[in-house]
Length: 278
Image (cartoon, rainbow, N blue to C red; front, top):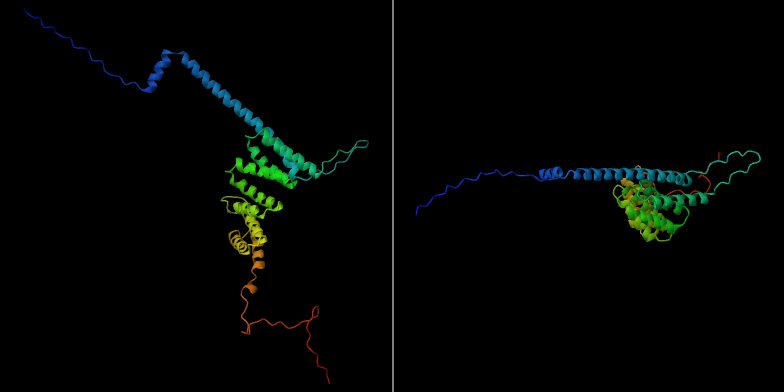
């Protein structure tokens, strides 16, 4: 039985096309046009949200700045001079210094509570501690200083000042050991402010606690590092008192180099005897 040989047709080879991820997404968008509207809506919503946040931030910053200006005036500036009063009218009652400080403290606290995310809140946190320090409400001042150190550890410019104020605060509370720690932190802080003042206060506190040698070392280093500072001049003066040059190297006895000042009666100049003319 004869067999027929079937001739197989060659299949046409279709070239492979590599589709990228972006092209796949574009094809999906073309086949689903509603995605365009959804994406546009999401973008517009995000832009509207960002714009709203910016408007609210500016508004909060403006309110916080206004409160800070009033608080700063009450704290730093003297009370206004009395104004002339028209006849028949009562003179307005002026606030006392204590009342001005308490009002300033309440305004700073309001900024911190209501507008904590503003840049003004950082200044208010520091200044509120200073106001309570001035009012001699030491616990309230310490609470606000510690809160500043917790919230803004990266602000080395103001952090040094806070440690300096904490040192003074601990001195008033009768805790010299804590005062030394804060003064030392402020003195050794890199890029800190008032390092010369902190160094002098560190030396003085060490001196008061009987650590004379450590105090002299701080005074010496301070006078060399901050030669143009008035605090360095104070440190040099303390160094001279603690270690007078004449007392540090007295001449040995019996060498004939001892200073022998002529005896002079107190309050009267020395006089040579006058020879009488014959």
